[in-house]
Length: 227
Image (cartoon, rainbow, N blue to C red; front, top):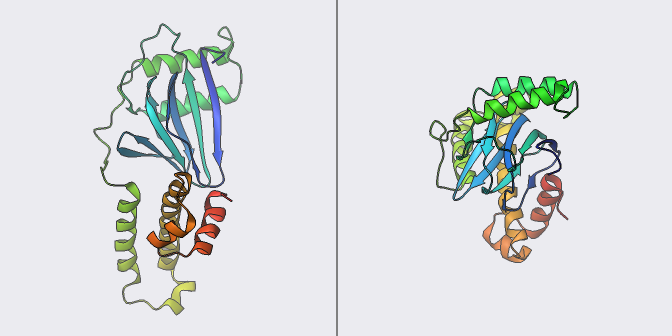
């Protein structure tokens, strides 16, 4: 890092998965649109729109940016003498943080003697006084996509029950079905992408999936841009 505090923007038009890495700095992930999944150890946490998640230096993690998601990452140098939280977790109130980020976007300056620098010092002090927590957030040791599939399947059964597919075009509930199916497809594609990156061949993956090789390739291109 060249500065004590740096801000970067992340925009994902398609599914984007980062490799697991260890941080050489402290990081605050703030999701502005859509949602991002963060994997810490065996658990995954959802960072939804208008939520912030703190990652202390040396955290080992990976991120999954869902299609059409937008987030800001604020990095804090370990060289700073400030005492940052040592535990990872959600930081509240997030509205205060987003207000600072909005004001900062209007000045775009990290000069400590200018308004941008003063805003960053306020943000730094807020983080230093924060108590990141995972306790109030529902997590699971099962793969997250399994939970999502279970939830969407049960919802779709309730919505579809007693309905005719021919009525779908004019039925509000059918829009919900399509949205749920889209979410399920994204999580399925994420698992397919992980298998491909691990070195598995399409023929092997197809044997584990309900999709054939051509369908898998199409899904990877459309959702994740993987060719």
